[in-house]
Length: 246
Length: 305
Image (tube, each protein chain N blue to C red):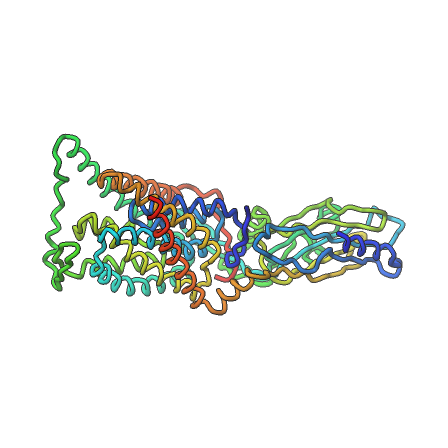
Protein backbone atom coordinates (compact mmCIF):
# COMPACT_ATOMS: atom_id res chain seq x y z
CA UNK A 1 0.00 0.00 0.00
CA UNK A 2 2.88 2.33 0.87
CA UNK A 3 4.44 1.65 -2.50
CA UNK A 4 1.16 2.42 -4.22
CA UNK A 5 0.71 5.67 -2.36
CA UNK A 6 4.21 6.71 -3.23
CA UNK A 7 3.58 5.95 -6.89
CA UNK A 8 0.32 7.91 -6.89
CA UNK A 9 2.03 10.89 -5.29
CA UNK A 10 4.77 10.68 -7.89
CA UNK A 11 2.14 10.82 -10.61
CA UNK A 12 0.39 13.80 -9.12
CA UNK A 13 3.68 15.61 -9.12
CA UNK A 14 4.29 14.81 -12.78
CA UNK A 15 3.75 17.58 -15.30
CA UNK A 16 0.83 15.90 -17.04
CA UNK A 17 0.44 18.60 -19.68
CA UNK A 18 3.44 17.19 -21.51
CA UNK A 19 1.62 13.88 -22.03
CA UNK A 20 -2.06 13.11 -22.42
CA UNK A 21 -1.83 9.95 -20.32
CA UNK A 22 0.46 8.32 -17.76
CA UNK A 23 -0.38 5.12 -15.94
CA UNK A 24 1.04 2.42 -13.69
CA UNK A 25 0.13 -0.75 -11.82
CA UNK A 26 0.41 -1.60 -8.13
CA UNK A 27 2.56 -4.68 -8.78
CA UNK A 28 4.15 -6.04 -11.92
CA UNK A 29 4.58 -9.65 -10.74
CA UNK A 30 1.91 -11.89 -9.25
CA UNK A 31 3.42 -14.87 -7.50
CA UNK A 32 1.25 -17.94 -7.15
CA UNK A 33 1.93 -19.76 -3.88
CA UNK A 34 0.12 -22.65 -2.20
CA UNK A 35 -2.29 -20.25 -0.51
CA UNK A 36 -3.03 -18.25 -3.67
CA UNK A 37 -6.77 -17.73 -4.07
CA UNK A 38 -6.71 -14.78 -6.42
CA UNK A 39 -5.70 -11.20 -5.85
CA UNK A 40 -6.44 -7.65 -7.00
CA UNK A 41 -4.09 -5.30 -8.77
CA UNK A 42 -4.64 -1.58 -8.87
CA UNK A 43 -4.24 0.27 -12.16
CA UNK A 44 -3.87 4.02 -11.78
CA UNK A 45 -2.97 6.98 -13.89
CA UNK A 46 -3.42 10.61 -14.72
CA UNK A 47 -4.70 12.44 -17.79
CA UNK A 48 -4.24 15.94 -19.09
CA UNK A 49 -6.78 18.54 -18.08
CA UNK A 50 -9.06 19.48 -20.99
CA UNK A 51 -12.04 21.71 -21.53
CA UNK A 52 -14.66 19.09 -22.46
CA UNK A 53 -14.32 16.17 -20.04
CA UNK A 54 -17.70 14.67 -21.08
CA UNK A 55 -16.21 13.50 -24.41
CA UNK A 56 -13.28 11.85 -22.73
CA UNK A 57 -13.24 8.15 -21.76
CA UNK A 58 -10.73 5.84 -20.16
CA UNK A 59 -10.56 2.09 -20.84
CA UNK A 60 -8.32 -0.28 -18.88
CA UNK A 61 -7.77 -3.72 -20.45
CA UNK A 62 -5.88 -6.61 -18.83
CA UNK A 63 -5.10 -9.30 -21.39
CA UNK A 64 -3.78 -12.78 -20.55
CA UNK A 65 -1.51 -14.85 -22.80
CA UNK A 66 -3.13 -16.13 -26.03
CA UNK A 67 -4.72 -19.55 -25.56
CA UNK A 68 -5.91 -21.89 -28.31
CA UNK A 69 -9.60 -22.77 -27.89
CA UNK A 70 -11.81 -25.50 -29.29
CA UNK A 71 -15.60 -25.16 -29.31
CA UNK A 72 -17.72 -28.25 -29.98
CA UNK A 73 -21.42 -28.47 -30.68
CA UNK A 74 -23.47 -31.47 -29.61
CA UNK A 75 -26.31 -32.88 -31.69
CA UNK A 76 -28.75 -35.62 -30.97
CA UNK A 77 -27.85 -38.89 -32.72
CA UNK A 78 -30.00 -41.95 -31.98
CA UNK A 79 -31.21 -40.43 -28.72
CA UNK A 80 -27.70 -39.61 -27.47
CA UNK A 81 -26.04 -36.18 -27.46
CA UNK A 82 -22.83 -36.45 -29.46
CA UNK A 83 -20.10 -33.91 -30.30
CA UNK A 84 -20.52 -33.27 -34.02
CA UNK A 85 -19.14 -29.99 -35.36
CA UNK A 86 -16.17 -28.11 -33.95
CA UNK A 87 -14.34 -24.83 -34.48
CA UNK A 88 -10.82 -23.96 -33.34
CA UNK A 89 -9.76 -20.43 -32.49
CA UNK A 90 -6.24 -19.06 -32.13
CA UNK A 91 -5.09 -15.70 -30.85
CA UNK A 92 -7.77 -15.12 -28.22
CA UNK A 93 -6.47 -14.19 -24.75
CA UNK A 94 -6.94 -16.73 -21.94
CA UNK A 95 -7.94 -13.89 -19.62
CA UNK A 96 -9.59 -10.58 -20.46
CA UNK A 97 -10.73 -7.89 -18.04
CA UNK A 98 -12.04 -4.53 -19.17
CA UNK A 99 -12.82 -1.57 -16.93
CA UNK A 100 -14.15 1.59 -18.50
CA UNK A 101 -15.82 4.88 -17.67
CA UNK A 102 -18.81 3.94 -19.87
CA UNK A 103 -20.06 0.85 -21.79
CA UNK A 104 -17.66 0.42 -24.73
CA UNK A 105 -20.37 0.79 -27.39
CA UNK A 106 -20.93 4.34 -26.22
CA UNK A 107 -17.22 5.18 -26.23
CA UNK A 108 -16.27 4.54 -29.85
CA UNK A 109 -17.62 3.11 -33.15
CA UNK A 110 -17.18 -0.67 -33.71
CA UNK A 111 -14.32 -0.21 -36.18
CA UNK A 112 -12.16 1.61 -33.64
CA UNK A 113 -13.01 -0.91 -30.90
CA UNK A 114 -12.10 -3.87 -33.12
CA UNK A 115 -8.79 -2.26 -34.12
CA UNK A 116 -7.62 -2.18 -30.49
CA UNK A 117 -9.48 -5.28 -29.29
CA UNK A 118 -11.45 -3.20 -26.81
CA UNK A 119 -14.61 -4.99 -25.68
CA UNK A 120 -15.22 -8.72 -25.42
CA UNK A 121 -17.33 -8.78 -28.59
CA UNK A 122 -14.67 -6.92 -30.56
CA UNK A 123 -11.95 -9.51 -29.92
CA UNK A 124 -10.95 -11.03 -33.24
CA UNK A 125 -9.27 -14.44 -33.34
CA UNK A 126 -6.11 -14.52 -35.47
CA UNK A 127 -7.04 -17.88 -36.99
CA UNK A 128 -10.26 -19.86 -37.22
CA UNK A 129 -10.43 -23.53 -38.14
CA UNK A 130 -13.94 -24.64 -39.01
CA UNK A 131 -15.92 -26.26 -41.83
CA UNK A 132 -19.02 -24.32 -40.87
CA UNK A 133 -20.13 -20.81 -40.07
CA UNK A 134 -17.82 -20.00 -37.14
CA UNK A 135 -19.92 -17.14 -35.72
CA UNK A 136 -22.20 -19.19 -33.41
CA UNK A 137 -19.10 -21.05 -32.18
CA UNK A 138 -17.32 -17.79 -31.39
CA UNK A 139 -20.37 -16.46 -29.55
CA UNK A 140 -20.54 -19.71 -27.54
CA UNK A 141 -16.85 -19.43 -26.62
CA UNK A 142 -17.31 -15.85 -25.38
CA UNK A 143 -20.42 -16.90 -23.42
CA UNK A 144 -18.52 -19.73 -21.69
CA UNK A 145 -15.52 -17.51 -20.93
CA UNK A 146 -17.76 -14.86 -19.36
CA UNK A 147 -19.60 -17.46 -17.31
CA UNK A 148 -16.36 -18.89 -15.92
CA UNK A 149 -15.10 -15.41 -14.99
CA UNK A 150 -12.20 -15.43 -17.44
CA UNK A 151 -13.71 -12.65 -19.56
CA UNK A 152 -15.24 -9.65 -17.80
CA UNK A 153 -16.47 -6.26 -18.91
CA UNK A 154 -16.96 -3.82 -16.04
CA UNK A 155 -18.18 -0.43 -17.28
CA UNK A 156 -18.32 2.38 -14.75
CA UNK A 157 -15.66 0.95 -12.46
CA UNK A 158 -13.02 3.63 -12.97
CA UNK A 159 -12.85 5.96 -9.97
CA UNK A 160 -11.72 9.52 -10.42
CA UNK A 161 -9.83 10.79 -7.39
CA UNK A 162 -9.64 14.25 -8.89
CA UNK A 163 -10.37 15.76 -12.29
CA UNK A 164 -7.22 14.17 -13.73
CA UNK A 165 -6.31 11.28 -11.42
CA UNK A 166 -8.02 7.89 -11.84
CA UNK A 167 -7.76 4.38 -10.47
CA UNK A 168 -9.42 0.94 -10.88
CA UNK A 169 -9.16 -2.47 -9.27
CA UNK A 170 -8.58 -5.51 -11.51
CA UNK A 171 -9.17 -8.98 -10.04
CA UNK A 172 -6.75 -11.76 -10.99
CA UNK A 173 -8.66 -14.93 -10.02
CA UNK A 174 -7.09 -18.20 -8.92
CA UNK A 175 -7.76 -20.14 -12.12
CA UNK A 176 -5.84 -17.91 -14.55
CA UNK A 177 -3.03 -19.18 -16.76
CA UNK A 178 0.59 -18.33 -16.01
CA UNK A 179 2.57 -16.12 -18.34
CA UNK A 180 2.89 -12.54 -19.48
CA UNK A 181 -0.18 -10.34 -19.18
CA UNK A 182 -0.53 -6.87 -20.62
CA UNK A 183 -2.18 -4.00 -18.82
CA UNK A 184 -3.36 -1.50 -21.43
CA UNK A 185 -4.77 1.93 -20.68
CA UNK A 186 -6.58 3.80 -23.49
CA UNK A 187 -7.63 7.40 -23.53
CA UNK A 188 -10.51 7.98 -25.96
CA UNK A 189 -11.63 11.42 -27.07
CA UNK A 190 -14.67 11.75 -29.34
CA UNK A 191 -14.51 8.07 -30.25
CA UNK A 192 -10.82 8.09 -31.16
CA UNK A 193 -7.83 6.76 -29.25
CA UNK A 194 -5.68 9.78 -28.49
CA UNK A 195 -3.24 8.09 -26.17
CA UNK A 196 -2.46 4.56 -24.97
CA UNK A 197 -0.01 2.89 -22.67
CA UNK A 198 0.84 -0.78 -22.14
CA UNK A 199 2.59 -2.32 -19.13
CA UNK A 200 3.55 -6.00 -18.79
CA UNK A 201 2.36 -7.99 -15.76
CA UNK A 202 3.83 -11.39 -14.99
CA UNK A 203 1.88 -14.20 -13.35
CA UNK A 204 4.04 -17.10 -12.24
CA UNK A 205 4.37 -19.84 -9.66
CA UNK A 206 7.06 -19.62 -6.99
CA UNK A 207 8.70 -21.82 -4.39
CA UNK A 208 7.62 -25.43 -4.00
CA UNK A 209 4.76 -25.05 -6.49
CA UNK A 210 7.19 -24.00 -9.18
CA UNK A 211 9.59 -26.82 -8.43
CA UNK A 212 6.78 -29.39 -8.59
CA UNK A 213 5.50 -27.94 -11.85
CA UNK A 214 8.99 -28.01 -13.35
CA UNK A 215 9.58 -31.58 -12.20
CA UNK A 216 6.24 -32.68 -13.68
CA UNK A 217 7.16 -31.16 -17.03
CA UNK A 218 10.90 -31.70 -17.28
CA UNK A 219 11.32 -35.05 -15.54
CA UNK A 220 7.85 -36.60 -15.91
CA UNK A 221 9.04 -40.20 -15.51
CA UNK A 222 10.72 -39.48 -12.16
CA UNK A 223 7.71 -37.40 -11.13
CA UNK A 224 5.36 -40.29 -11.96
CA UNK A 225 7.51 -42.74 -9.99
CA UNK A 226 7.60 -40.37 -6.99
CA UNK A 227 3.80 -40.09 -7.07
CA UNK A 228 3.38 -43.86 -7.20
CA UNK A 229 5.95 -44.38 -4.41
CA UNK A 230 4.16 -41.78 -2.27
CA UNK A 231 0.81 -43.51 -2.86
CA UNK A 232 2.18 -46.95 -1.94
CA UNK A 233 4.02 -45.64 1.11
CA UNK A 234 0.95 -43.84 2.46
CA UNK A 235 -1.16 -46.94 1.84
CA UNK A 236 1.32 -49.06 3.75
CA UNK A 237 1.72 -46.59 6.65
CA UNK A 238 -2.02 -46.27 7.12
CA UNK A 239 -2.42 -50.02 7.12
CA UNK A 240 0.25 -50.41 9.84
CA UNK A 241 -0.99 -47.49 11.97
CA UNK A 242 -4.66 -48.34 11.88
CA UNK A 243 -4.13 -52.04 12.54
CA UNK A 244 -2.66 -51.19 15.95
CA UNK A 245 -5.55 -48.98 16.99
CA UNK A 246 -8.13 -51.76 16.73
CA UNK B 1 -8.95 -23.81 3.54
CA UNK B 2 -7.81 -23.18 -0.03
CA UNK B 3 -4.71 -24.79 -1.48
CA UNK B 4 -3.14 -24.26 -4.90
CA UNK B 5 -2.61 -27.29 -7.16
CA UNK B 6 0.62 -26.76 -9.13
CA UNK B 7 -0.17 -29.00 -12.12
CA UNK B 8 -3.93 -28.42 -12.36
CA UNK B 9 -3.07 -24.71 -11.88
CA UNK B 10 -6.07 -23.83 -9.75
CA UNK B 11 -7.06 -23.56 -6.08
CA UNK B 12 -9.31 -26.03 -4.29
CA UNK B 13 -10.69 -26.40 -0.78
CA UNK B 14 -8.42 -29.04 0.74
CA UNK B 15 -10.98 -30.18 3.32
CA UNK B 16 -13.43 -31.11 0.55
CA UNK B 17 -10.72 -33.03 -1.30
CA UNK B 18 -9.74 -35.00 1.82
CA UNK B 19 -13.44 -35.68 2.45
CA UNK B 20 -13.85 -36.96 -1.11
CA UNK B 21 -10.88 -39.27 -0.59
CA UNK B 22 -12.33 -40.52 2.71
CA UNK B 23 -15.77 -41.31 1.27
CA UNK B 24 -14.52 -43.04 -1.86
CA UNK B 25 -11.80 -44.85 0.16
CA UNK B 26 -14.46 -46.24 2.50
CA UNK B 27 -16.37 -47.79 -0.41
CA UNK B 28 -13.17 -49.13 -1.92
CA UNK B 29 -12.16 -50.85 1.32
CA UNK B 30 -15.65 -52.28 1.76
CA UNK B 31 -16.09 -53.69 -1.73
CA UNK B 32 -12.48 -54.36 -2.71
CA UNK B 33 -12.69 -51.95 -5.63
CA UNK B 34 -10.47 -48.95 -6.30
CA UNK B 35 -13.29 -46.42 -6.41
CA UNK B 36 -11.97 -44.65 -9.48
CA UNK B 37 -15.34 -44.92 -11.22
CA UNK B 38 -16.79 -42.69 -8.48
CA UNK B 39 -13.77 -40.43 -7.90
CA UNK B 40 -13.23 -39.32 -11.51
CA UNK B 41 -16.79 -38.00 -12.06
CA UNK B 42 -16.81 -36.40 -8.57
CA UNK B 43 -13.54 -34.53 -9.22
CA UNK B 44 -14.81 -33.28 -12.57
CA UNK B 45 -17.98 -32.13 -10.82
CA UNK B 46 -15.78 -30.28 -8.28
CA UNK B 47 -14.17 -28.32 -11.11
CA UNK B 48 -10.92 -30.24 -11.71
CA UNK B 49 -10.06 -30.50 -15.44
CA UNK B 50 -10.97 -33.99 -16.65
CA UNK B 51 -7.45 -34.92 -17.80
CA UNK B 52 -6.06 -34.13 -14.33
CA UNK B 53 -9.02 -35.88 -12.67
CA UNK B 54 -8.46 -39.08 -14.68
CA UNK B 55 -4.69 -39.14 -14.12
CA UNK B 56 -4.68 -38.17 -10.44
CA UNK B 57 -7.49 -40.51 -9.41
CA UNK B 58 -5.19 -43.37 -10.39
CA UNK B 59 -2.74 -42.72 -7.55
CA UNK B 60 -5.59 -42.41 -5.06
CA UNK B 61 -6.68 -45.85 -6.23
CA UNK B 62 -3.10 -47.17 -5.84
CA UNK B 63 -2.95 -46.01 -2.23
CA UNK B 64 -6.42 -47.20 -1.18
CA UNK B 65 -5.79 -50.55 -2.82
CA UNK B 66 -2.37 -50.85 -1.14
CA UNK B 67 -3.95 -50.25 2.22
CA UNK B 68 -6.72 -52.75 1.51
CA UNK B 69 -4.39 -55.32 -0.03
CA UNK B 70 -2.13 -55.38 3.04
CA UNK B 71 -5.16 -56.05 5.24
CA UNK B 72 -6.13 -58.96 2.94
CA UNK B 73 -2.54 -60.20 2.77
CA UNK B 74 -2.46 -60.65 6.53
CA UNK B 75 -5.49 -62.90 6.10
CA UNK B 76 -3.56 -64.86 3.43
CA UNK B 77 -6.36 -64.07 1.00
CA UNK B 78 -4.37 -63.23 -2.13
CA UNK B 79 -3.76 -65.43 -5.16
CA UNK B 80 -0.52 -64.00 -6.55
CA UNK B 81 -0.38 -66.48 -9.44
CA UNK B 82 -3.81 -65.34 -10.65
CA UNK B 83 -2.83 -61.66 -10.20
CA UNK B 84 0.35 -62.26 -12.23
CA UNK B 85 -1.53 -63.88 -15.13
CA UNK B 86 -4.10 -61.08 -15.21
CA UNK B 87 -1.38 -58.43 -15.10
CA UNK B 88 0.28 -59.95 -18.18
CA UNK B 89 -2.95 -59.32 -20.07
CA UNK B 90 -3.20 -55.95 -18.34
CA UNK B 91 0.10 -54.65 -19.76
CA UNK B 92 -1.03 -55.32 -23.32
CA UNK B 93 -4.38 -53.74 -22.53
CA UNK B 94 -2.79 -50.56 -21.13
CA UNK B 95 -0.73 -50.02 -24.28
CA UNK B 96 -3.85 -50.58 -26.42
CA UNK B 97 -5.78 -48.16 -24.20
CA UNK B 98 -3.17 -45.39 -24.50
CA UNK B 99 -3.28 -45.74 -28.30
CA UNK B 100 -7.11 -45.65 -28.33
CA UNK B 101 -7.10 -42.65 -25.95
CA UNK B 102 -4.99 -40.61 -28.37
CA UNK B 103 -7.16 -41.63 -31.34
CA UNK B 104 -10.43 -40.73 -29.61
CA UNK B 105 -9.09 -37.43 -28.34
CA UNK B 106 -8.20 -36.38 -31.87
CA UNK B 107 -11.78 -37.13 -32.95
CA UNK B 108 -13.24 -35.11 -30.03
CA UNK B 109 -15.29 -38.15 -28.98
CA UNK B 110 -13.42 -38.97 -25.77
CA UNK B 111 -16.26 -37.99 -23.42
CA UNK B 112 -18.83 -39.94 -25.41
CA UNK B 113 -16.73 -43.11 -25.54
CA UNK B 114 -15.95 -42.90 -21.82
CA UNK B 115 -19.59 -42.29 -20.85
CA UNK B 116 -20.96 -44.97 -23.17
CA UNK B 117 -18.51 -47.61 -21.97
CA UNK B 118 -19.31 -46.68 -18.36
CA UNK B 119 -23.06 -46.97 -18.97
CA UNK B 120 -22.87 -50.28 -20.81
CA UNK B 121 -20.43 -51.89 -18.41
CA UNK B 122 -21.77 -50.58 -15.12
CA UNK B 123 -25.35 -51.16 -16.25
CA UNK B 124 -24.67 -54.74 -17.31
CA UNK B 125 -22.65 -55.67 -14.24
CA UNK B 126 -25.06 -53.91 -11.90
CA UNK B 127 -28.08 -55.78 -13.24
CA UNK B 128 -26.33 -59.18 -13.09
CA UNK B 129 -25.16 -58.54 -9.52
CA UNK B 130 -28.52 -57.22 -8.38
CA UNK B 131 -30.35 -60.27 -9.77
CA UNK B 132 -27.98 -62.79 -8.27
CA UNK B 133 -27.73 -61.18 -4.84
CA UNK B 134 -31.51 -60.72 -4.61
CA UNK B 135 -32.00 -64.38 -5.52
CA UNK B 136 -29.46 -65.40 -2.87
CA UNK B 137 -31.05 -63.23 -0.20
CA UNK B 138 -34.49 -64.63 -1.03
CA UNK B 139 -33.20 -68.18 -0.78
CA UNK B 140 -31.52 -67.27 2.52
CA UNK B 141 -34.71 -65.83 3.97
CA UNK B 142 -36.84 -68.82 2.99
CA UNK B 143 -34.56 -71.02 5.07
CA UNK B 144 -32.53 -72.41 2.20
CA UNK B 145 -28.94 -71.79 3.28
CA UNK B 146 -27.28 -72.70 -0.02
CA UNK B 147 -26.55 -69.91 -2.44
CA UNK B 148 -28.38 -69.45 -5.72
CA UNK B 149 -27.67 -72.00 -8.42
CA UNK B 150 -24.55 -70.99 -10.32
CA UNK B 151 -25.09 -70.35 -14.01
CA UNK B 152 -23.46 -73.00 -16.15
CA UNK B 153 -20.01 -71.75 -17.28
CA UNK B 154 -18.95 -75.01 -18.92
CA UNK B 155 -17.43 -73.25 -21.96
CA UNK B 156 -14.66 -71.86 -19.76
CA UNK B 157 -13.57 -75.40 -18.92
CA UNK B 158 -13.35 -76.30 -22.60
CA UNK B 159 -10.55 -73.77 -23.28
CA UNK B 160 -6.93 -74.94 -23.68
CA UNK B 161 -3.80 -73.86 -21.71
CA UNK B 162 -5.06 -74.98 -18.34
CA UNK B 163 -3.19 -73.96 -15.24
CA UNK B 164 -3.53 -74.69 -11.54
CA UNK B 165 -4.29 -71.78 -9.20
CA UNK B 166 -3.73 -73.33 -5.77
CA UNK B 167 -4.86 -70.40 -3.63
CA UNK B 168 -8.14 -70.14 -5.55
CA UNK B 169 -8.55 -73.91 -5.73
CA UNK B 170 -9.08 -73.65 -9.48
CA UNK B 171 -7.78 -75.56 -12.49
CA UNK B 172 -8.75 -73.44 -15.47
CA UNK B 173 -7.46 -72.09 -18.78
CA UNK B 174 -5.29 -68.94 -18.58
CA UNK B 175 -7.23 -67.36 -21.47
CA UNK B 176 -10.17 -65.91 -19.43
CA UNK B 177 -7.92 -64.23 -16.80
CA UNK B 178 -5.63 -62.92 -19.57
CA UNK B 179 -8.63 -61.47 -21.43
CA UNK B 180 -10.08 -59.90 -18.28
CA UNK B 181 -6.66 -58.39 -17.52
CA UNK B 182 -6.48 -56.94 -21.03
CA UNK B 183 -9.89 -55.27 -20.71
CA UNK B 184 -8.95 -53.82 -17.29
CA UNK B 185 -5.66 -52.42 -18.60
CA UNK B 186 -7.41 -50.72 -21.51
CA UNK B 187 -10.12 -49.24 -19.25
CA UNK B 188 -7.51 -48.00 -16.80
CA UNK B 189 -5.81 -45.95 -19.49
CA UNK B 190 -9.05 -44.60 -20.97
CA UNK B 191 -11.15 -43.93 -17.89
CA UNK B 192 -8.68 -43.50 -15.03
CA UNK B 193 -10.12 -46.41 -13.13
CA UNK B 194 -8.43 -49.41 -11.54
CA UNK B 195 -11.16 -51.66 -12.89
CA UNK B 196 -12.11 -53.34 -9.60
CA UNK B 197 -15.79 -52.94 -10.39
CA UNK B 198 -15.22 -55.27 -13.34
CA UNK B 199 -12.53 -57.57 -11.92
CA UNK B 200 -14.49 -58.43 -8.79
CA UNK B 201 -17.69 -59.55 -10.55
CA UNK B 202 -15.64 -61.23 -13.30
CA UNK B 203 -13.67 -63.23 -10.73
CA UNK B 204 -16.81 -64.21 -8.85
CA UNK B 205 -19.15 -64.94 -11.74
CA UNK B 206 -16.86 -65.91 -14.62
CA UNK B 207 -13.85 -67.53 -12.97
CA UNK B 208 -15.80 -68.79 -9.92
CA UNK B 209 -12.99 -67.84 -7.54
CA UNK B 210 -13.78 -68.17 -3.81
CA UNK B 211 -15.08 -64.81 -2.52
CA UNK B 212 -12.49 -64.54 0.26
CA UNK B 213 -9.61 -64.63 -2.28
CA UNK B 214 -11.31 -62.29 -4.75
CA UNK B 215 -10.90 -59.06 -2.74
CA UNK B 216 -7.16 -59.40 -2.08
CA UNK B 217 -6.30 -60.63 -5.57
CA UNK B 218 -8.24 -57.88 -7.34
CA UNK B 219 -6.53 -55.27 -5.14
CA UNK B 220 -3.04 -56.54 -6.09
CA UNK B 221 -4.02 -56.42 -9.77
CA UNK B 222 -5.40 -52.88 -9.33
CA UNK B 223 -2.24 -51.61 -7.58
CA UNK B 224 -0.05 -52.81 -10.44
CA UNK B 225 -2.27 -51.47 -13.23
CA UNK B 226 -2.81 -48.03 -11.65
CA UNK B 227 0.89 -47.64 -10.79
CA UNK B 228 1.88 -48.30 -14.41
CA UNK B 229 -0.84 -46.04 -15.80
CA UNK B 230 0.08 -43.19 -13.41
CA UNK B 231 3.63 -43.18 -14.77
CA UNK B 232 2.31 -43.36 -18.36
CA UNK B 233 -0.11 -40.45 -17.73
CA UNK B 234 2.66 -38.41 -16.09
CA UNK B 235 5.00 -38.89 -19.04
CA UNK B 236 2.50 -38.55 -21.89
CA UNK B 237 -0.05 -36.00 -20.60
CA UNK B 238 1.69 -34.18 -17.68
CA UNK B 239 -1.67 -34.51 -15.95
CA UNK B 240 -0.78 -36.03 -12.55
CA UNK B 241 -1.11 -33.45 -9.76
CA UNK B 242 0.94 -34.63 -6.78
CA UNK B 243 -0.62 -32.15 -4.32
CA UNK B 244 -4.15 -33.23 -5.25
CA UNK B 245 -2.99 -36.86 -5.08
CA UNK B 246 -1.65 -36.29 -1.55
CA UNK B 247 -4.98 -34.82 -0.38
CA UNK B 248 -7.07 -37.60 -1.92
CA UNK B 249 -4.72 -40.31 -0.63
CA UNK B 250 -4.68 -38.95 2.94
CA UNK B 251 -8.46 -39.24 3.11
CA UNK B 252 -8.52 -42.38 1.01
CA UNK B 253 -6.23 -44.62 3.05
CA UNK B 254 -8.10 -43.87 6.29
CA UNK B 255 -11.42 -44.47 4.55
CA UNK B 256 -10.17 -47.74 3.07
CA UNK B 257 -9.20 -49.15 6.49
CA UNK B 258 -12.58 -48.22 7.94
CA UNK B 259 -14.27 -49.72 4.88
CA UNK B 260 -12.48 -53.06 5.22
CA UNK B 261 -13.73 -53.26 8.81
CA UNK B 262 -17.28 -52.31 7.90
CA UNK B 263 -17.21 -54.86 5.08
CA UNK B 264 -16.17 -57.66 7.45
CA UNK B 265 -19.34 -57.08 9.49
CA UNK B 266 -21.65 -57.50 6.50
CA UNK B 267 -22.59 -60.78 4.86
CA UNK B 268 -21.27 -61.41 1.35
CA UNK B 269 -24.74 -61.24 -0.21
CA UNK B 270 -25.56 -57.93 1.47
CA UNK B 271 -22.20 -56.56 0.31
CA UNK B 272 -22.94 -57.57 -3.28
CA UNK B 273 -26.43 -56.10 -3.13
CA UNK B 274 -25.04 -52.78 -1.86
CA UNK B 275 -22.35 -52.67 -4.51
CA UNK B 276 -24.91 -53.53 -7.20
CA UNK B 277 -26.99 -50.54 -6.10
CA UNK B 278 -23.99 -48.15 -6.11
CA UNK B 279 -22.95 -49.37 -9.58
CA UNK B 280 -26.48 -48.99 -10.98
CA UNK B 281 -26.92 -45.48 -9.55
CA UNK B 282 -23.70 -44.32 -11.26
CA UNK B 283 -24.76 -45.99 -14.53
CA UNK B 284 -28.19 -44.30 -14.49
CA UNK B 285 -26.67 -40.88 -13.68
CA UNK B 286 -24.26 -41.20 -16.62
CA UNK B 287 -27.00 -42.41 -18.97
CA UNK B 288 -29.13 -39.42 -17.99
CA UNK B 289 -26.29 -37.07 -18.91
CA UNK B 290 -26.08 -38.67 -22.36
CA UNK B 291 -29.78 -38.53 -23.25
CA UNK B 292 -30.95 -35.38 -21.45
CA UNK B 293 -30.86 -32.16 -23.48
CA UNK B 294 -27.67 -30.36 -22.38
CA UNK B 295 -28.09 -26.87 -20.88
CA UNK B 296 -25.72 -25.63 -23.58
CA UNK B 297 -25.06 -27.66 -26.72
CA UNK B 298 -21.76 -25.83 -27.15
CA UNK B 299 -18.76 -26.74 -25.02
CA UNK B 300 -15.40 -24.99 -24.76
CA UNK B 301 -11.97 -26.55 -24.30
CA UNK B 302 -8.99 -24.29 -23.50
CA UNK B 303 -5.46 -25.13 -24.56
CA UNK B 304 -4.05 -27.19 -27.41
CA UNK B 305 -5.89 -30.43 -28.10
